[in-house]
Image (cartoon, rainbow, N blue to C red):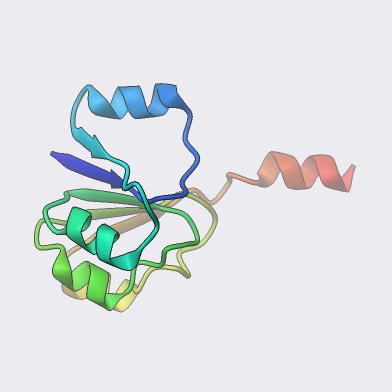
Amino acid sequence: MKIVVAHGMEMVEEAIAMMREVASVVIPGDGSEETLLAEVRDADSLLIGINPPAGRRLIASAGSLRHIARMGVGVDSVDLKAATEHGVMVTNVPDVTSDTVAEFTM
């Protein structure tokens, strides 16, 4: 299994270590679209933030891709139609900012 963590995603080392126990984890060295396209080509899962977006070109080029995790609220940076057409499940973290919003409100 191969997991690609898009460039710019800030993840704690413990989370990356846990993923590495069950998969090959790749964190591209730069944020270029070409680098991401090359890495995701044989990936099973892709973890993204707001950028880079997971558009039709990216999804179509990833023949093994089965999961896109949008590490934040919403899925507006993912082409849901393309994901559906290619059998790719899309998830997000809808409550990630709940505590921060509540604290700010107080």
